[in-house]
Length: 143
Image 1 (cartoon, rainbow, N blue to C red):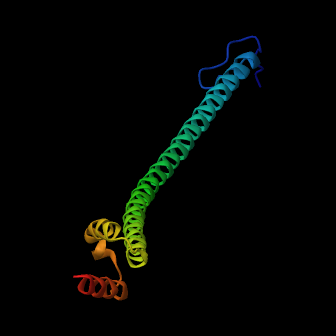
Image 2 (cartoon, rainbow, N blue to C red):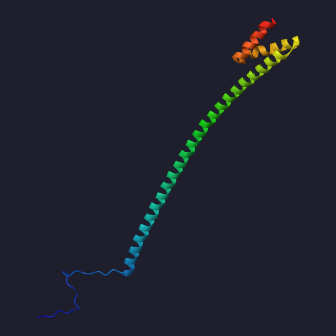
Image 3 (cartoon, rainbow, N blue to C red):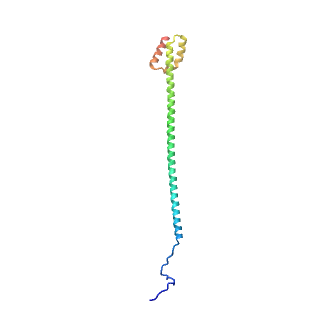
């Protein structure tokens, strides 16, 4: 049996094992970790941006809905004010007509009666039915 020397170069058939430097392996791991960390931060930032956008859209929709409700309520309030003013005017005219009729019925002075008749004539449409009958009878009797 023949002994081979160890100092000789290995044969080509034997696989060559390349040793990796630990500093190089650490550097690759660190590079991968930094890339993963950066990607995670990017994904989180994009998620926060999307969440912020969704909250802003919801807020805008709520504000628009409130503005629409405000406009509707304001127009209804204006309509109610106009209706109340119209009703107030009509009631004031009724009151004025009733007061003038009462003064007309109570007065004895012919000049005052004529002045009250002239003032009551445009307001007689505001007299309720029984008061209108009283007014008409009074006018007929004074002719």
